[in-house]
Amino acid sequence: MDHGGLAHALTACGRDGFTGELRVPGSPGGAFHLRDGLVVAAESPGAPGAEALLLRSERIDGEQWAELVRGTGERWPTAALVERGYAGAAQLRVVCLMALQDAAFAVVAGRVDACERVTGTEPHAPVAPGERPARLLEDAVRKVAAVDALPYPVRPDRERPLPMASPQQACTPLQRDLLAHADGRRTARDLAFRTGRGVYTVTVEIARMLSEGLLECAGPLAPVPLLMAPEAPVARQREQAAPEPEAPPSAELPHRAPGASGITEVLPPPTSGVSWKGFFRLRHGTAE
Amino acid sequence: MDHEALAREMRGLREEVTGITDTALAAADGMLIAADTAESIDPEGLAALAAAGLGLARRTAAATARGALRQTVTYGSQGCVAFYAVGDTALMVVLGDEGMDVNRLHRATHPALDRIGSILTEKTPEGV
Image 1 (cartoon, rainbow over the protein chains, first blue to last red):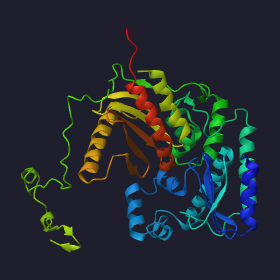
Image 2: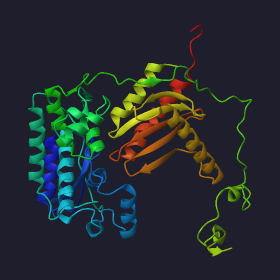
Image 3: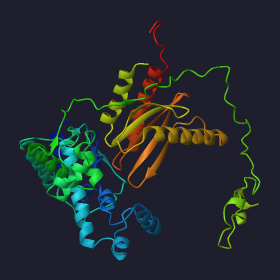
């Protein structure tokens, strides 16, 4: 299926006032979430989502994020993020919209195999009221054409650039980050995730830096060097003479006696009055 | 062992599944066989951790009668690490960023594991 097929499927969703998900298998592929015919979210393995952008921006760390998600039961806890001062409501809307448009770019820049409608799923970080499907796709197609028109056209998943300058020679924070993380293994898409920026932004900047000589590509087909252990252990079929000690056939787990390991003598005593000995096992729904 | 074929499989996997950042292959005892890893990763240490983690998971599956171990996945806020057994003599580690689709990874990896298992256990021709 070509991109015309995707455009047809997505605009049909808009015309039908579809609510649900349009899955787009491919490379990287992705999914568009619609409400009443408007695209409220999009995600793709080819572009960082709102959560990745927020976490990589270091406004909030992984543990604080996990605590908010646990506490609110929401996968995108907008109210709690604003309340705790991690981000403003407008900033969060912008992050979600950027992630949506960036995912659309990643899908369009890649290969589209099929389009299938799915209902009953909920997007993580929806925007309100949503984007018109035709406008969203036009924007993505325009961006792909803009990248192709650059003197050094780059595909998000193709070139794996090497730095030709030190990060100190960079003119902008984005250039500095790209020079620090480009290693000849990472594509524009990988660098977008690594630096917490949109894949379109990173793709364009890499194209510019390649034409300025700040980055260089060994070529899209150059093999990535692979480390082989000098004396690689040879995996063989297991010898019959050396059987692995079998787990006991019974389903019983090994029993341990409290304090048998001696760890309680090594570790300081717990400061709280709560002891692990207070735990009990539930068996058949009742405490032993 | 055909090193080129092994390299092709490992690179092929990284090309096929968006979001894979590194792969490593080790014997079941944690000795590194091959690594396609960034400089920031210590492949020997990763192989040893993978052997320990997979060994623990295999014993856990056996002790709780969960059948044959398929894989274990460690999820972090910035990506995940998947450990796969290659037969019962080797293992493979795949690192991915937060964009990697783990179900797609499993679908792509299982056929590759069979091929890698064959490469690892194939007999070296006599006199070579």
